[in-house]
Length: 334
Ligand code: GA4
Image 1 (cartoon, helix red, strand yellow):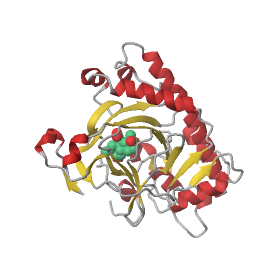
Image 2 (cartoon, helix red, strand yellow):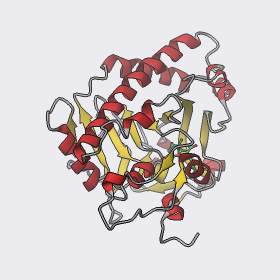
Image 3 (cartoon, protein in one colour):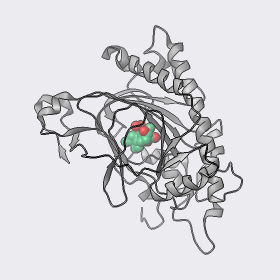
C-alpha cells in the first residue's frame, strides 16, 4: 500500500491507495434462508470466515431499489445542500473524514440512527423539498432488514444450541438497541488513471464493533474481506443479496468461536459504489460477555467485563484500523 502524495488531490493526499484486485473470490459462503438447514450453514460460515451472503432473504427488491435511487438523489445534490446535514456527530452527513480521529477515505456518507426516530431533523434538513419520500424509503428498508436480521440471529442461536433462541436477537429487537444505519457513496475517481493503476481506499480496513452488520450494495465491486492470514479477497458484488459480517460484540458473546471480520472498500476509478449497511448493536447498558452456554466447563471468558457503552466509547477513541478488542482481552495488561 502507498500513501497518495499527488498535489492534484490537494487536501486528500492522505487517502491511501491500493492495487485493484486481479480476480474475485468465488468461495464466499451462501446461506439460503429458505433452506431448512440454514442454521448449520450460518454457524459454519461464522466460524470459517465471520462472513456470508444471504439469498432468499424475503426483503422486497423494490425497497432496495427505491432507497438506492433516493440515496443517489441525495448524494447528487450540490455540496452546500448536503453540508446542511453535517458535520457528523457521529450522525449526519460526512465527507472524506471517517470518525473523530483523523481517518480519511474516498467516500461521502450519511449516518443515521435507527431508534427511536430513524432520521433526525439534522439529516432531514438536507431534504427541504420532500423529506417524507426519503424518510419512508429508509424506514421501509430498515424495517425489512431488521426483521431479516432477527431471523438470522435466531437461526444462529439455534445452530449454536443457545437457549432461549432469542438470546441474541432480543438485543437488536430491544427498543433501546443502539443500532445505526449508514449510506455510503464512493464516487468514481477517474483522475487516478495516471496513478499507475492504483485505486483509492474508500473505507479503510476495520472490524465493526456491533453484533452483526448487514450490507447491501449496488453492482460495483470494491468490498474486500481479510482472511486471518492477512490475505485480502475481493467480494463479487450482488445487488440482490445481503452480506453479513460478524462484529466484535458477537466475537465476545461466542467467546471467540466466531471472529469479527476485517474488511475494507476500494473506490472504483469509473463506477459509483453505493452501499447501505445496518449495524445491529445492543442497548448501551448491556453487558457484553460470552453466553454461559458457549463457555465449556473449565473454560473462562477470554474477555474482561464491559458494557456496550464502554466498548463504544473506547471505539470512538480509536483509529479505524486499530484492534479495538485488544484492550478488552484478558491477556491484555491495559
Ligand atoms: C465502523 C462501523 C460503523 O460504520 C461505525 C463506524 C464509526 C463512525 O464512522 O463513526 C467508527 C468506526 C465504525 C469504528 C471506530 C471509530 C468509530 C469510526 C471510527 C474511527 C458507525 C461504527 O459504529 O464504528
